[in-house]
Image (cartoon, rainbow over all chains, first blue to last red; front, top):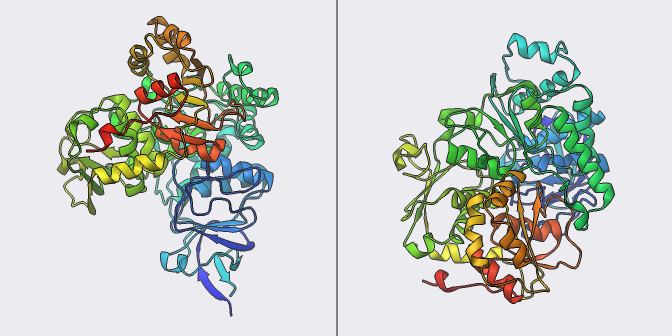
Length: 139
Length: 427
């Protein structure tokens, strides 16, 4: 049976992908290879994982202000996550989604969820996201 | 849970004119991005800024270039004095390195786009070393994490953490969401770090500050922090290194040091009279663990020593010179300093660059090893005095890194192998 979570859409949209979850915040600059979608922060628990096409679930973005530009490059190159869920409205991720919409007419959904819901999501689960922020977790 | 996508954002007539396109297509695009972000962060109004520092000028690929050219081609002009962060290429010196010609050309086109928008070509991640730096209380929109934390903490200017792409929109519109660190109430410290029995000898040492900053970032996350218990007064370069580290390992945008930084005459003032959410004692154990984490190199093999993240200051050039006297670097090791054109010009005038050349060192301007593809694949092992380089190099450059103070870096370059000095870290 699917579980439902109501998220707050920061940049609304629909997506489907397998969850990639970490409790550890991530800086995309130095942490995300825009050419391949690999997590390359060698001190991060997700190091070596490919996030392209996945639903990336993180507490928030960390560090460098170049993070948004990395995500924009990944969006253009087709190596971005399918969607990003964070525990608060993350301005860095949201901005990349907004600018991609301005420039290319489409971005990716960026949503905020509660901590309680964050802890219900496990890596590998299939996730469906609706434009109204409904997040469906498959078993 | 209620979904509330559009909190009430009150716009002025001028904001609205920009948004509706009456001031041209560039202002419209920039204002649309600013107002959408204002909604994301829940701002009720926009406010004026009096300056900006742009990190978006860094070439990362087609998208960042297209974004810059889209704005410039639409006639964008910045409305406030605006400095530029590092570029994607050293215009004068890139041919001496491994930078592909195609990269250099595109990075240069991106530089040109920002110059066309009226930005000052400062090309530095340390704009606070320039005379034009903001004054206490000034509202600005700065990008670049190390510049943001320095502006807020050391200068007492006020900026949020502006991400790439938003910084230039703020400069073009002269407006930002009135939230976060722009507002006094949000500048109070939340967490108190108390230094416990850290030897004065270590506190006086340049290698202490990046390590302490790394600890701060890990502990504070994105909170405003107050650090107490300093036995010495750190100088600007030490605070620069400290902040850059905290903004790499964490998302810290403002710290207070009682008696040192301008908004903290006392611990009570740093907290604006509130109680700390958390009090965390910082011991030598924390510092030793952090220092160890900054090094990933498994052995002593060394290919290159790199100094200057954030960009090397005039004072740092002055500290380096005596260490180079009578020695030269090992032939198998490269020695590089990354700095701004402004600091290099001052250092040249003061006669501080010749000793570096005689030592066998090189200088790269306007950019750094993380932002331009200048290093050869043969460089596998780096040593640096910068926690920021140490933090990002393994991921961005796929190299091993060793961390050490300025003197350790020079000694390692001379001997051709990593030589870390544990002495001051042992007590």
